[in-house]
Amino acid sequence: MTTFAQSRRKGTVLIVVLVLVLLMSVAAYGFLLSMQTENIAARASGDRLTAEQAAFSGIELLSAVLEMPRVRRRELGGVANNPELFGDVPLDDSLDATDEEEAARFIVTPPGLATDPQAPVQFGAADESAKLHLGKLVEWDKLQPDSG
Image 1: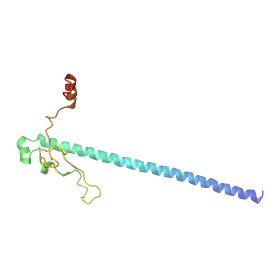
Image 2: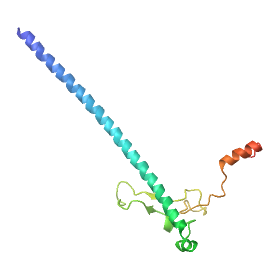
Image 3: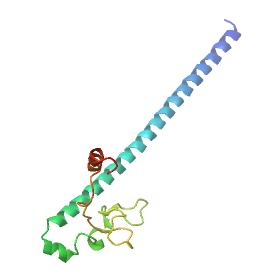
Image 4: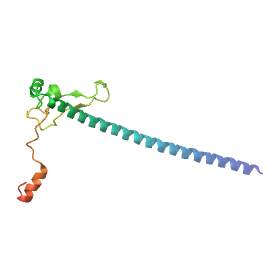
């Protein structure tokens, strides 16, 4: 064999090794992107579960207060607007106020339903028995047009 043929084979091995390293790098980068996406999805799922549990915790607190006798509820300040009982209740005591993530807190009544127009938020329960069901409006509109 000539020296020209031997040097030709050595160059081919270098190119094959280069292509293999390149393919392994692309596969590792794809794996990294996949794991980053899974990490984001896992965090979003954890945040969703935390929000659900915060809502369930608020429901349970209100249920416990409503199960009390009426006299005891009045002693606590009632359920209509009671910031001392329902306002700013931390759901996770393990987080400090200086932590990057704030501790979850809940209120029972959303803004706009407060009985006091000056207060932006009512901490308590609202009576929704006087609200109309939207399905009834459709039925009334079928019986008498433009009544809904």
